[in-house]
Length: 305
Image (cartoon, rainbow, N blue to C red; front, side, top):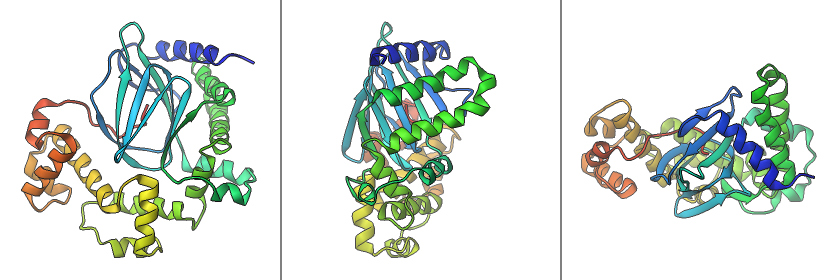
């Protein structure tokens, strides 16, 4: 069996081949992204999609609520739900660049794998529920990931083989230490699945005033159960989650669509400019106008890598 360093060495070569400069890059495989950085980055606030991520050189950190997850070579990261997070490259130089890959987790493809994998009932009941996790990458996961990257050199093979290898990667995630959490979130009528439905509802309705009773009724949970399980998965309350969504979108509107501060705050649901400015400063460390003037980092909603 190959050494882990052999897998990383070849993955680094492929990522370097398809990333000529610093930045985030889409690949010919629709779900696969590459990232390259030559220096540590400022905190990046992002609305993160479900994904599997692997750092092949350097290191990163991700913050969910008040929790910080550090990961680097030898680890893999899984995000199982749409979550507002803060990410940062912590190790990168011009000589040893930060290199990473991310694969979006397609819910339909995950369900296809689940339909073919027999899961003991105890597996779906065990472990925690947090929507983010970092674990050591086993050789089987590294091998499947490397084979997915190699397809970039044979693009005619991508339509036929990429979906199969993606399913293999999902299988490795499901049978690994984070598998029970993925299972609970995917299982119909489980608390994790109901939290996923609550998150979908919040993302569609975040500009409206939040009524916890209405949200709890929508996902068929009591208010106390919703609060408990929502916090267990996201490390925040539904109200805090909505606030992050509002502020992230307001920031995007100001930086990308060039809306003024008042219009951006109103567009995402704030009726009080002073409340908008106060909550914005609390999250980003600067007033809305001061942040726009500094343009500290891009606004992202892509796969976190």
